[in-house]
Length: 197
Image (cartoon, rainbow, N blue to C red; front, side, top):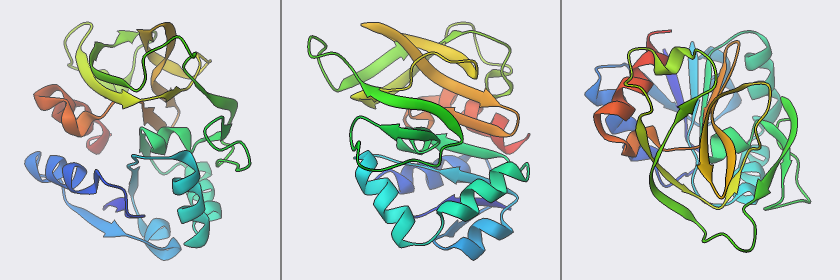
């Protein structure tokens, strides 16, 4: 069963609607036990890095998320759900992320117009299971002011003043900076690829 983790994120209903539209069965979970029982995990996120990490810690799920990822359970982090995978973020430097990856999430330069909002193209770096059957250089919807630099696990990048990680894949762990739930039929296909892993 796919578990969507509910920490109060604003885009939760959009993610639910996406899974419903592709006919995927899911449950909403909000505790460690729900994460532990999941066959796949989706962590959506909008807002502030500090908000998501404080909420996850208050709910006592940090260690369980990391344990399940290490156990090989497929994980998809959306926007802030992607940021949570890292050591930390310049958005809330006093807090730590899950630390699955060593990098730090950084802010676009002061010269950049933020948030980076709207449609932009994905440029694949490697073959990626989430992009299977997706058109070449697809357009997806972004809304963010902070980004993950290019790294070994970058599967697709986007360019907005600098090239950055738009899609990450490392074994069972996936993360997207864009919002597939707001990216139309193409976003549905990307989520369906995760569901069918």
